[in-house]
Image (cartoon, rainbow, N blue to C red; front, top):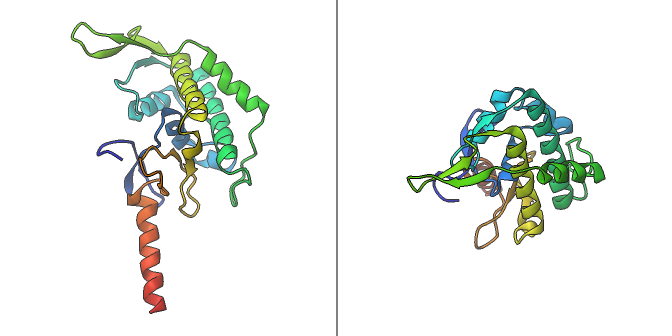
Length: 206
């Protein structure tokens, strides 16, 4: 992960760490999810969806006009993405987590969102990247996210979508590293906890 890449999250003990999901469509999965993940819901108001966009890898962050309906659509798309991605990664289910397998309805949600007009890039007079029009809609944001998911799930990193190996960590990422051996959501979080447990185990064994 390059310095500064990813979204800053907070662990269950309050430690802040940076998580690089590798794709926009996987970044939205950090905001909650279906089943037991609903207790972590972070998309409740239009401001919440704007805040997620500002933390995401969309650069520059588009100015957004978000409605309550857009927030409901965002949760619906996120949950469909989670079930679809996790079914691809862990077809045997998730021990300790109540999440149903993906079904045709989830693909319909993703495809309907992707079929709408996405965010449109524009070149500014100063040579910098902008979005057109100046204020985008929630539907455009979700279309861009859904299209990213289609590209990811049908592209070269489709077989590198993984779930963190940490105990009861359900963060999903696309391993875009050259070696392709990434195991953890972040070395600052689950990777470090694994090293500490391994060190203690060696000490106890000695």
